[in-house]
Image (cartoon, rainbow, N blue to C red; front, top):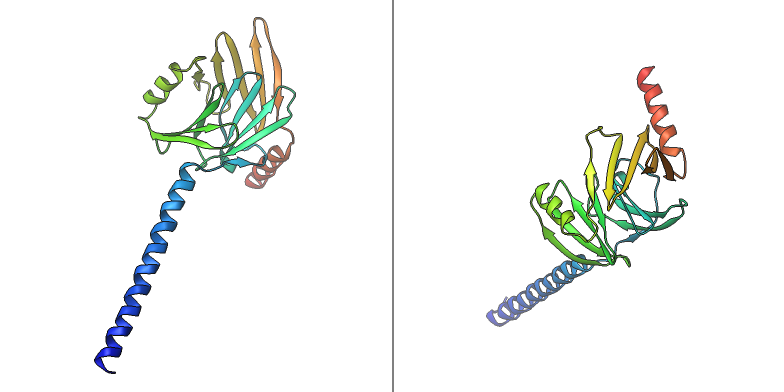
Length: 205
């Protein structure tokens, strides 16, 4: 191959490499931008591995860890919306008037998402203490109590107290009042309860 042809071929290869690198760079930059501003609206799933919940302005926000979602319901149990989380497992939610926070306990970071499902902000936060500071800075502070173990969660907001009870994957949420409590939500199906029951039977057999 003559020297001229070698130079031409090298030029073509270099141009191709540069072009592919440029395409990759643009794609990556676009991917980061889309992730930063991603739309996180989702469909509801059976509630499993509920790690936290919140009650704000007549709506119930439930962290559905197994399906990586925060699902929203009214007090009649009607589904309103679901929002995708970045990861499953232990996530917490804090609702406000115009957006909500999703706190990822494993990664110690927070997403701020509006109710159209658009991620507004993402930032790191120190474990536990930083999250509590974020809660306390909200207009309606949310107090959480996990002292009863993994099957009962208490939260409170401005004198309103709520309790979540998990019985073998069947979830109920109650509003606590003086001398009693009122159920405001229960799982829409017994699917997760039956799955858990079957699994326990298989283990026992």
